Length: 305
Length: 305
Image 1 (cartoon, rainbow over the protein chains, first blue to last red):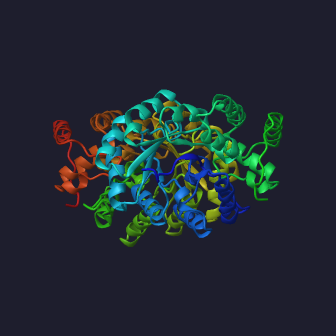
Image 2: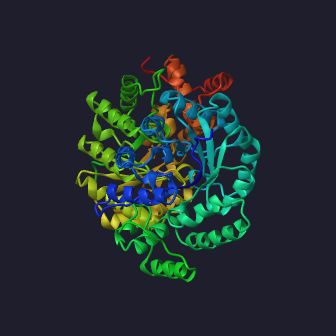
Image 3: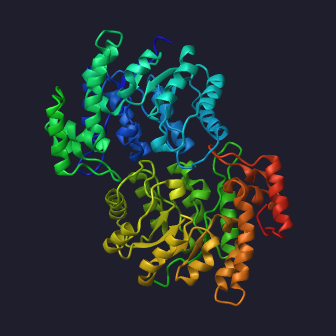
């Protein structure tokens, strides 16, 4: 399993043109910057506004990064949706293009669904895609999806599809849950990713695979540095530094704040665009965010302009 | 506004083939049965499993009922989705085929979004569709979508698009909310539909337009009868009779229960199929449901076999 994708991944934020279409060239530039910083591309995630992007557009985004020559072994695009045919279509497209894995939301419209129903859903997706190269990373994000991935569900899926069901991203924000996933499944090679770098050090110490974090879009080198030296003497100090920056971003609506920071340090205001129902930061919020980040010694370098 | 769609509408349940594709001929037969019973076709709703159906399949379902010669003036298909391009595509397709209106969910993946963001979303959909014939019915179903339609949002949309924003379906289950919608907006011609027949009589007495109800799939003639005679002397008694049947269905998972009843009275077990994450009733549940319905004197007649 040593060829599995690990480390720090970013749900790459999605740039939009003035007419609200996806700015594919700018998107691939951002992906290049992230790969240059050793960050894996978990594009089409929650922080990518993936669920505000149509299936056709999502296909075009996968094609764009492949066509740009980026390494698919560093990619874990989000392919989940509410409906099975769309999820199958996106997943098949990703695996046929050599992506290391896919990050898969549970179907999230109907609430209070049973583990039996979710098992059938994931099972049917895996069978329909029918590709041995598929690696599915289950996406547990109950604060947003409301529909979660339970431990018994993981256990059952692992039993049925041991080589395909490769890991999980835990965005519950509940360390006890991440700990339980690590304890139950990591020893058998199941890769547990923390949902933010807040839990990166704990996750690695617990035998986890890394983190997939919104703020890896902006604080990429520092987060990767901790991943690289987590067994070193100053790991706890590095974690505390990461937490300070994360805290600042978390005190704003996350997606607009990430885009505001990228807009500022790439000197390109078009980065602030979001799709409804999200709204960009108010000008005063934008200024406050940048001031707070600067006061904390934060900056981003090397972004495409 | 007298040509607006009113009365009792059904979120038509969707039949699936053994390979899980939509059974279009069976679907159009069910729509014919409903129109023969004076029930409007709010197909592609929550109880239609619309969010488990891909955009391409949804387009094909609109085409199927149009091609079958059913009257689009009796149709209010659901065209909402999480993302704007898909919602625009489905809405445009429905309005270009002459549908009386569309029932539109708010984008429901991102939670805690602002009314400003939702206003921009609906506003952009309406502008992009750009068709004067469009009639949007806002779909308020917080128990499932988690993202709701507030009174200030309705007020703002009505101000901007008075001829397009035509009404609401209130599936909050909270009569106080329906009452507030009626009080604030119905006097100006905004059509308030109750989200179930439980509130049909109250809604009509309050100046509402009718109801869009799951159980109109099965208890169609009786619900329409109350709509037709709501000012008559036995309206309250009719309402109580409707409530008894509704109570039985509500004590099971609603969508599988509707399909079980249709399967039973059409003598066609294929109707029990649902798409994951939903699961059909257990055999014992299925038998109990039918027994309870029969004990209450309920049956469905005239279904296509």
